[in-house]
Structures are given as structure tokens and as C-alpha cells.
Image (cartoon, rainbow, N blue to C red; front, side, top):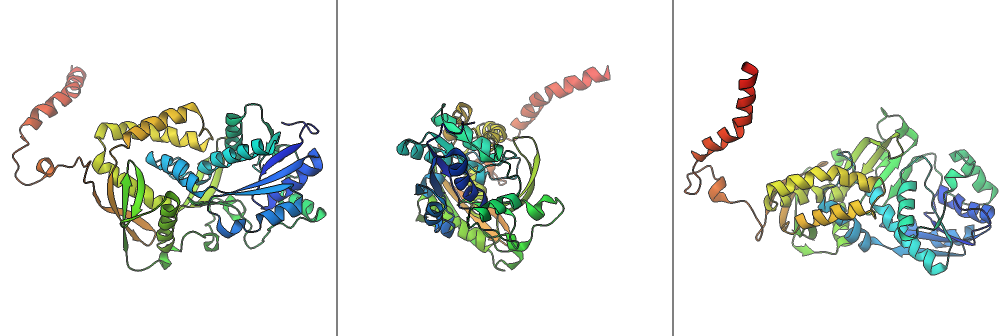
Length: 404
């Protein structure tokens, strides 16, 4: 924890929401320092329009809004999707994968501004405090970190709103939409309020990145996604940049009500937490990626990679993107993707997406001469008898020993 009086200038990861709006003023009041506000554009759209004006009105000495969309998808989302990384089998890690990039840019701004501290709005109960701070220390082992939620006595939404009124800070509060949310190009997350009751169904008005599946078109739509070395490069024959491609998949997913998940996850700090997520484009992308892998990846290579996926996903979830174990796993994963070149055809219909075709002109391991159910001249079916007996040997010996 930084000592008050030692900090001259701090860079705050700023969203303009309730928490970070309060934090900006609180840092000025409590630490007596200049505050640089920084907002990362990861695809939030119009949510960022008011950021510079509001930050300066609240007291920021300067404000950065950095367009990180292409870097986010190219250097963070796509590498993660090469591994088909899904935390606890359900969560596409949309918030988790954004934090290291935000922290990276925040540290770059701190260096450029000559700041001696960085700050964030993550609570002492959540995962984000870990993700931000592990990344900060990667870039500067001696950086001063200010985490107001671990210091102040503003321990409720009511207390924060009272602080805002006292200091004439306009904050976006809504009784109609009281839950917490975090959005980027990959997903949007929802927590709190009604979701704290594990049996309460999320209200329909909560969802913003997908239509209600029942209201999706009555006719299915087909999408062809092309991959090179494990990364998607084109949709329906049109080459797109990483951010453009994910945006396009999000549009397909929104239209067909794809990507909704309601889960109870295990936070790194130890508690269980209920979250509702929308990941429309990512859900389609993962299905397509696995389809191309299925026709191009060697069986044992795929099984080896898959055996590491849960560990890789946990590494990202827990905040260790810049750790050596993630980099080592990434090197292995990327090597497995050299042959993942081809096209997947995905059928979209009322909340569902499924593979209906896959092909690779250069790296297909599917050989019809061997796989056909018709007559062939390359496979001797009688050979299977010896194969089975050799593989059954340990089972036969075990049975003999039991029967003695």
C-alpha cells in the first residue's frame, strides 16, 4: 500500500462509473496528488463518449482514452482462443483477458506522465484486484499501488452515493438497472443485486448483446469462418482485421440470441460468485475453431493440449497472463496451431450454434480411403484382432489374477 504524502501523481484506471468516479476525487482528497484518468476503449462504444469531460470536471489533471480494440483481439483474445480456454467449462474469460491489457497501457501512461503510483477500482473481494496488480508488478516491481476499496470506509453503494452528492459528482445510478456490469468486445458481465439470489432468473432487460432466443429469427443462418494457424481471418470469404471479425461475429450472435451463460464460479480469493455473461461472437468462434482443429490436429497432440486447457484457463482467470507458466503453455499451444488451417461452417438458430461442416485444403487429416464404410483397398480389417488383443492384455492378466 502506498503511503499518503509520498504520491505526487497517480494514474487511475477510470470507467466513469460510480466506483471510479468516487475514487478519482478520493485520491485527490486523501493523497493530495494529481490524478491522470485512463480509459481503455475495448469496444464499449458510446459509454466512453463522456469520459474526458467528466474526468476533468471531477478533478483529473489529464485524461487518456486509448483505442485498444485491435490489440485486445489480436494479442489477447485470439491467443486465448487458440487454446479453447474456458474457465470451469463455462466462462469465456471476457473480463479476465481484458485486465492485463488495461494494466499494460496504464503502466505505459504512468511512465510517460512521470507518475509514481497507479490505482484501480477493484474491490477487496474480487478477482480484478489480483489481475491488475500482478500485471502492474510485472512491468514495475517497485510501483506504488493504491486500491481504495482496501483502504476507505465507503463500504456500501449508499455510502458511495452520499460521497458523490457531497462532492457534487454526477454518477450513473439507476434503480431500474442496479446490477454491476463490465463490457468489452468479447463479452459483457453482470453481477450483484437480483443475481445475488442464486435461484432468481436474470431479468430479460439485463441482456444487451443478444436478443431473447425465443425472439430470434425463425430461419437458421449459416456462417463460414476461415482460420490460419488457429486464428480466424475471414467470414463468408471476406478477410477482416481481428477487431472487425469479432465485431461481425457479435452481430451474428446478437441476431440469433447466442452466448448467454448463467453460472456460479469460484473466485480466486476463495468465495463463490454468481455471474451472468453474454459472449455472442466468442461462442461462435470457439465452436468454429474446434471444428477446424477436429480435421487438422493430430489426435495425441489435441489430447495433450486439451489436458492443459483447464490449467491455462485458470492461469488467465487468476491474473497470471504475464507469468512464465502462461508464456510456456502459450508456446506449446501456438505450436499445435500451425496446421489449424481451414474453414468451419456454423449453423445459427435461436440461441444455438453448431458445426455442420469443416474442411481444410492443405492440412486435413481426414482420409476417405481409410475412413469409408464402403469397400476399400488400404485397410485390412483383420489387423484389428491383434490390435485389440495386445491392448486387452493387461485386462486379461488382471482378470486371471482375480480369478485365482
